[in-house]
Image (tube, rainbow, N blue to C red; front, side):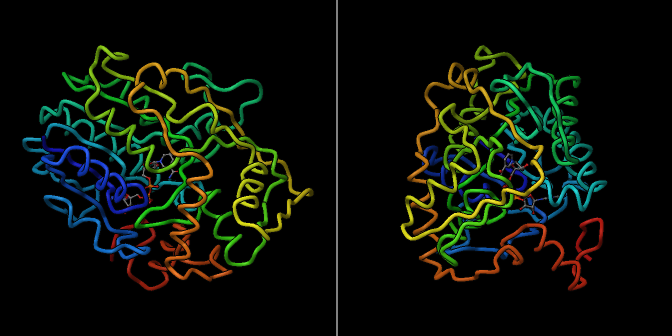
Length: 347
Ligand SMILES: NC(=O)c1ccc[n+]([C@@H]2O[C@H](COP(=O)([O-])OP(=O)(O)OC[C@H]3O[C@@H](n4cnc5c(N)ncnc54)[C@H](O)[C@@H]3O)[C@@H](O)[C@H]2O)c1
């Protein structure tokens, strides 16, 4: 089986490669990435891409149809992947996450891919009062990033899919260790705060709801979606991907980290303006469709793996919120260094 993974050199991609290689030893994996964060390795024993059959460097805005010859599946991870980057590079976010992404899906279809997996996001629920959001509930995307994910899902829904089985995995917020660890994710940030300064500073009042999923469990879901039978849910499925017990309030995450790393203090910004992004999510559909690929990692395990990963790196940078562990800071540093233009193309 031949699978193209776009955006494989980010946070999730290396964990996905490891997962697919171990579960499907004969699988042919081909990476395609522009390499924004390629050098941001964290405690990796080797370059994660050595486990690929081939690595292509390039921008999906110019992706060559040749890449899709003979493919069985495309896992589309490449994106401007969070709100801070989306806010800073709004037009580029639309160009990559929607326009270029739609073309990737069309090329996959044109080349006879059996499946297309789109890394979507629960952030499209935005601000959702009331009960946990189901897939059919109204969307309320509050940011350029969330809007781009909605636009791509709509494009998939209106596209002639041919015979391609399409799954939009609406992921909860990721957390957990990766060979390209990022710290602009709430749980990862809290663990890094606890280890470096002994104090977790919650930037909001701690009340927003934020469903989480460990990166290893995201990879289990992608594996399911690559191989999904269209009888399970239909040719196109949009599915919240995570588990009901991982709907947390931000303050509960801080307290869980405090419990796992004794001596940590937690300061909550009671005067912060309310964070509008707050949503609980219903994961019943995913439970029904993918009983064999349900999340397995516990919150405590995710925290412990982050702790040992960061300790293994000798991580001690108290000012990491201003460092290259934050994706936006890394892009800005490429631009300051004259390596990248403001439309995020290598110069
Ligand atoms: N991390 C999360 O919390 C989360 C949650 C929900 C969904 N997702 C989605 O999962 C996917 C992967 O997330 P991640 O955390 O690994 O993100 P990441 O930012 O760490 O990695 C994205 C990768 O895409 C590449 N890329 C970006 N623009 C590109 C372009 N124009 N051409 C080629 N490559 C390009 C980058 O170089 C990077 O390696 C994204 O689509 C993201 O939106 C992530």
